[in-house]
Length: 87
Image 1: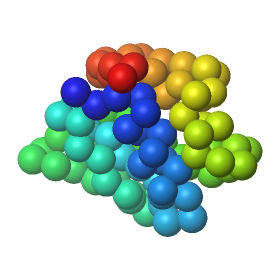
Image 2: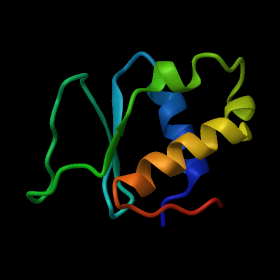
Image 3: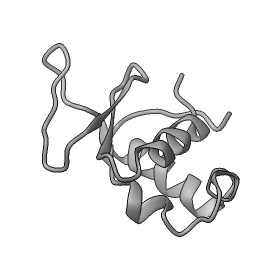
């Protein structure tokens, strides 16, 4: 199962390269802004834009343990009908 920390790390690494698409099976992919990827006929559960989410944090650890960021990611996936674990 994909965890909040996994997604935050991937979002952090994608800064300046594109957005992060997340599928139900836990797979992720860096995509260009505006791209609509499909895997096996299924669109991603959510697409995250890294810079608005994590650019304000000076270090990855600050982002990993920020309760507001964690809640934003979890709520986005759950509201889209997905599931995510904390750790």
